[in-house]
Length: 187
Image 1 (cartoon, rainbow, N blue to C red):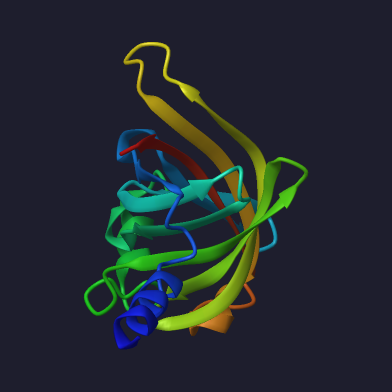
Image 2: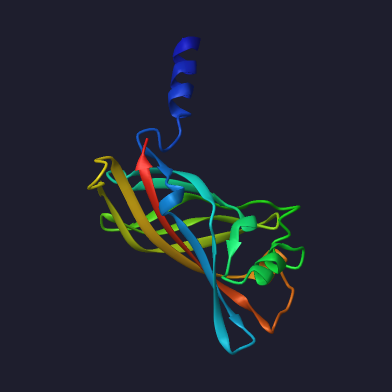
């Protein structure tokens, strides 16, 4: 009897995504980028050139999760001096906080298509809830290497001050549009 109870507890404790397919993010085809207003005159575009992560996805069960990490030390805006300033304690403080992470355990669907991801974004050691809207999504076979691949574009808007990044506000905007363009191969 005791063994049956233990067996039931073990089965019940399997993760929600036990039947989900696992995918590894392809860093060569993943683009994490942002836009921010500069002095009220223009929009600055930037990207983080190094991203890694995993995705769990089960379209039939309409479940999934994503865990992506990108390196603010790899920030690129097209101006090396600005990039160095963004790496400093005024902004990303990469010496103390080398990673930015987004971890989602809930994907909402519109019919059979993923529509949004709810999760936690961590910047400068501060974690806040964030919802990313999925603007495009596709899974299929890569035409060249014949491996199973999923890709998605997702976007959200955050206030950098919510994460403790307050330098230059209001001249440098508080509102930041964050965009993730991800491709991931099935493991």
